[in-house]
Image (cartoon, rainbow, N blue to C red; front, side, top):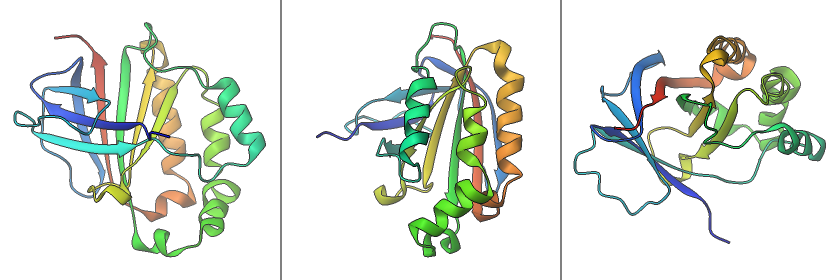
Length: 184
């Protein structure tokens, strides 16, 4: 089975115009005008200001009923109305990674209600999680969200709610990149 591999490239080209790059925790990333998302690791990044790679993997912290609910409610990406998006880059602390998977699950869902919070915003906000830690990337996760302009406030409420949880005490770097679909 082939693992879906994606590269997020900031530079002068791409279908997404970058509106803002905000460092929430830790240092930011350099400014860029456009974002392109490629579904391959074999790319030329000669004109890139930055690029981040990630793979789509299995859902690691979900129980079967949670996964079934996510699959049932999660809309597809690239919906015509979803012209707004956010790329959230996250690096967790070594203390997080020192925990066992069941301890991380307990913090993620039992204490922080991460899955429960996210479910409240479906189907208005579509998302895809990319794992980057094992690729040697500077961030552990790249989370990609898409939504229609009328759901921008909902998206802001979603990230505000997640950032107020116990789980976010383990985030040592977070960069929030907001974009709009505007083919060049």
